Image (cartoon, rainbow, N blue to C red; front, side, top):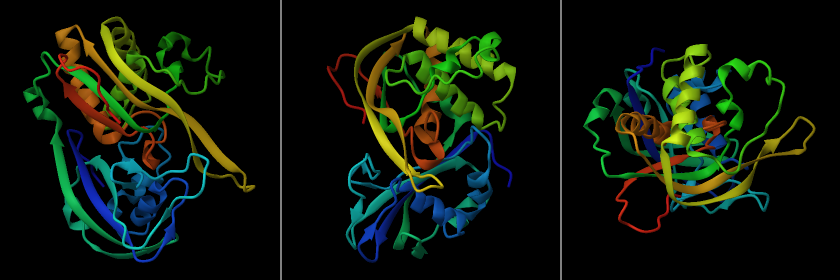
Length: 296
């Protein structure tokens, strides 16, 4: 399958369970199953199964009225028959994808669902120059736990020295850290982000983002999410952050570049485990005269 590097597609769906169902801890696994069994967007199957660390793919968790269904350690998420669940899949454009988007009843290990598409968005990255960000703040909302490691802000010359250090994931991200990861998501569209050139650019962007940004508001909190069980049946969980942060970039040229990276992040997410719906991002351009805000 040949993917375009300059176009990103987002397809929104609804799924309605035929009977009462209990969803897996990450409800994105239902969507992943639909892709792998060829029911929805089967051409993405190889990308889903790829072992690449930074894939240009986002599979959202299922949601009800804007709230994603995932387990934060409590009871399993039960859904009644006939309840509408929304989700989306974002990926690089490829010819013929629209023929793989259709409605139908599909069996999964988690129950039978009637799945139907409701909207398709195609973003042409070559036309982003038409987006005017002057006089606007970036309001970035993190809808699902977001996993960012501060190690990406190490100078590339020190990466090898601290390769064995497990720094974990930060719960208080800096603007530069968010932008560095957004850049990596953007570069995932090229198919290769494992080289020194991209490491240097991501590092520089992180430094500039911290130095030339002004945070004007935020509401962030940690959240632990269950991601499944290991081969011994033990519960596996990870801890990230959710909420929102509002900031401005003082340098005009940098701000234009940042707007492009954040827009791609709003389609493909940021951080680790984007392929199972973590790191879901919502981007809003906000009038700085408004007070307060919510991005999640």
